[in-house]
Image 1 (cartoon, rainbow, N blue to C red):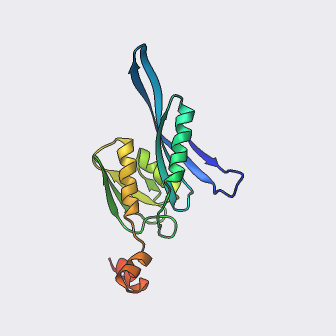
Image 2: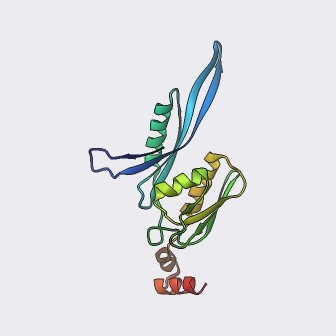
Image 3: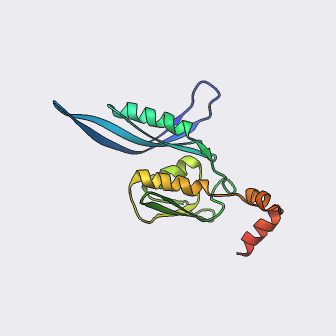
Length: 175
């Protein structure tokens, strides 16, 4: 359920992935009032990604609200060669725990459910992932984002340590 959107303004083209739709009920005096919650991931396919969660009385309205929230919460993730992660990383949120591993070219996206949507929208082509504890899509998305935010490129590490980038990449090649 991916959609590509492009507004008439100079807004970039986004990849929208609907991860989960859930029917929620509110008990009122006359019975039950049903609504829908939507979980959406939005990315530009070049390293920017965001996620949103919204509720509404109808599914399309919930998806639209979640998409707008995802566009507002976009973050930039540095990728190695624009196709994989710089290093292996773990992320936790609530009961959700994920392990993300960089992979050689040609591996593809080896990820289940919600995490696959994140990496497709992000523009990652080669990654191996594992969800360890919870299978709740909300917690998996948030844990994946926590892991992605903790990734640092060799340039960032070199600036932080005050050394050259070549020293960082030399150590990666030896390992």
